[in-house]
Length: 72
View 1: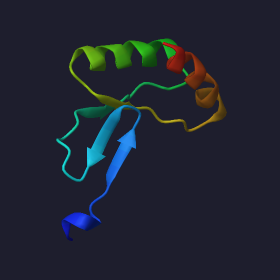
View 2 (view 1 turned 120 degrees about the vertical axis):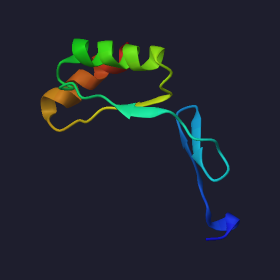
View 3 (view 1 turned 180 degrees about the vertical axis):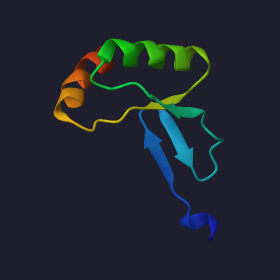
């Protein structure tokens, strides 16, 4: 793969790929529909230096909770 084939991807304010440095990332292991537990874990990950945090949205309850999570 040549350098021209590598792509830079922007996720919010963070750029990944191509010549960018590695990003510290993790994924929550809480039930996303439990917004308070998910928010608490996101804050703990952020305090530990995590730059990108993923959450799953496997069902409608979780999709509804995303609004509260995003607000916090």
